Each structure stands twice: as structure tokens, then as C-alpha cells.
Image 1 (spheres, one colour):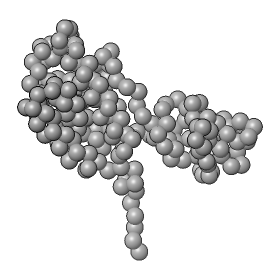
Image 2 (tube, rainbow, N blue to C red):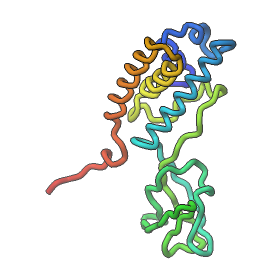
Image 3 (cartoon, rainbow, N blue to C red):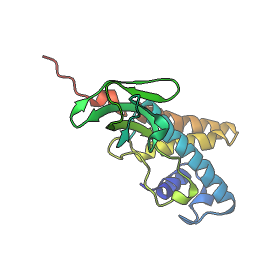
Image 4 (cartoon, one colour):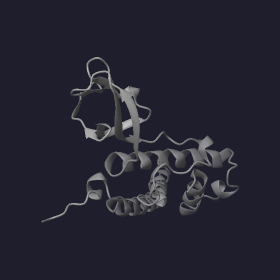
Length: 190
């Protein structure tokens, strides 16, 4: 689902015809609403990635003369390191509070790092871009539910607050059913 499609869903969910006028072309009050929805979408994606499921990425980094590299050297925003390897061999690593990763025994060596990352925030220019979470793991409408909740929470009326709570309930129900990294691993009992 593209960002534009999700925005149209959010507009329908919250009965905002100003946004639904023409998909892809927003102005005036509609543009203000779109920016509020995009903000909620970004926060929903961030919450899902930080707490349940984040996309993973693999890249090669060369450690320095001390067997270290900094997380700022990575291409994407790091959430969790999953794996440090050279070919098929896995290596132990330590991540300190300053963002330095120390890999024991690897000095000035190209190392393959697999890590979970936080996708870049979506912006208005990304209308034709797909939501950066895999649809088979996270239903994109779930992100829209969170945006609906935030949008209605900001409206300030009791009626909108009650509707916001309903959307938050739908989000929480779906959120509880997302299989996170630990749930994806199969454990075989013998």
C-alpha cells in the first residue's frame, strides 16, 4: 500500500472529505490534515519497529585497527544488531553507550552486519512510496489506525476523543498480534 492510499484510508476512517477530494493533490485544509496523518503514520511505524517488528538490512563494514566501528557508519538507523559475520562464521560483539561496536578478533577486516533498522520518516513527497513494513508481517492498515487515533486525539472534542479511543483499541488489538523477532524463531521441544 502506498502512502497516498493509506492517507485516503485515514481520511475515510475519520470522515475527512477535505483530504479525500483528489488523491495525490492536496492543498489548504486538506494539506494540513495530510501532514497530521503523515505524522501519525510515522509514529505508528516507529512504535511497531521499536517494540515488535523492524525490517532488517545487511551491509559490509570494515572494522578499524581496534576491531571497532561506530553505528553512525551504518547506512540506516540502527535499532538492534542481529548478527556479525565473516562468511559463515559468527562473531561476538559489544555495543557501548557511545554507539561503538567492538567485534572481538576482527581488526581492519570487512565484516557483514545484519541489523534491524528504523525506516526513514515518510514525507509528503513520498505519496507514491510503499509503506516501509512488509505487508505479510504488518498490515498497513494498522499504521493507519494509529494515525487515525492521533489525528482524532488532537481534535479536542469529547466525541472525537471517544472515536480516537476506538481507533487506539483497534491498533492495540492488531499490535498484540504482530509476531516480533523472538516469536518468529521456532523452538523445537525434544
